[in-house]
Amino acid sequence: MEHTSTKQAAAVDPARRRVFLFLQGPSSPIFRKVANRLEAYGHRCLRINLNVGDQIFWRRRGAFNYRGKPADWPAYLSAFIARHGVTDMLLLGEERPYHQAATAVARLNGVEVAVIEMGYLRPDWLTLERDGMSSNSHFPDDPQQILAAAASLQEPDWRKHYSQTFLADASYDLLYNLPNVFLWFLFPHYRRHAIFHPLAEYAGWIRRLASEKRRAAEAEATVALLFSAGAPYFVYPLQLETDFQLRAHSPYFSQKDAIDEVLTSFAAFAPPEACLVFKVHPLDNDLIPWCKFIEKKAAVLGLDKRVLYLDGGNLDHLGAASAGMVTVNSTAGLHALKQGRPVKVLGTAVFDIAGLTDQRPLDDFWQAPQSPDPNLGVAMFRLLAASIQVRGNLYSRAGTDAGADAIARRLNDNSLNQPGAFVDPPPRRKPQKRPRVATRPT
Image (tube, rainbow, N blue to C red; front, side, top):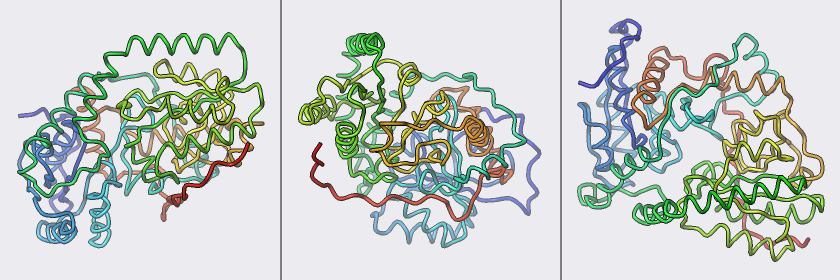
């Protein structure tokens, strides 16, 4: 039997036992481990599998398979909740279509929703929030409330505790997705939320791995030239095109729209000596030619000598010496804030808070970027770590054990978003998608 932590509190009183329903989680054993720990507390854990990959990563009792059509999913789930007395729901990413429908059903039936994701405070933290993230987050956005809630909190231990490898991540991803591709007929009506077919993504990753050393060397050489030139520069970290932070919590239909807006604004309003550096996400699948797109747009705007493109290198090292960072809503913005660098957010982000990020229009940011208030920054990071982050990761044994222990403990204690990090209704709004318009003249 899989290890269950011995550090848990005594089992709950039978009158307080709850029924936890697990929907889709990461391609990782962590949901199974969380369920083991919750049952050790005395709760009941159920799972609805939507595909073969879900089955592979659950591998324990309490599983049910949904093979129906997406249109029938809400009615099925509502009946399931009533039949089994579900009190709580756990899922990865509330913006997946199946999960959007599920959270709506949960609200109608008085079921508490807990959302688990990669941590805001990477590399070895996980996010655990009530109801959702970003636009759906209940984390406060009022600086005074954040300062008050964090007043008695201690500085977290920021040292890295757990390591995970790209090989483990990739192996779990293959184990989840390949059976879904080749055994699709077992769940014939399942619809993927991803933009790209898994086989196309894997082909892209193979190309990237084959050129990793060359790309890293080119990035290091470009950064060395940038530093030696001594000119001010801004950093734009690319996000994954498939990321729901971009798809659901930004005003853009594609990252191409954001890049177009940033380059156009930079050409018109940035100091003439300033440069703009685009940094590729380390897990980009290489299916969109970002370099070609950026270079073509930069050339049209007369920026070809002021725009740099990095497919490798250390983002923290790059950001520490920058004049500031522009991001849609990447967690890279948190790293920049921790370094005391100015940050401009274009979408919705939990850290986009007056006094921390620059609240002025993007056009104004280039000329005089505003640095974060250090006291508010300390308070925000302490409150994040204490209330909606837990220590652990998704792809190592030690990291998933630690994460499962902490997640189960908070769920059992009803302490999500505590202390002091739950504002109802959520204080942020989901941005309206902007229609694509012609580029402004420079």
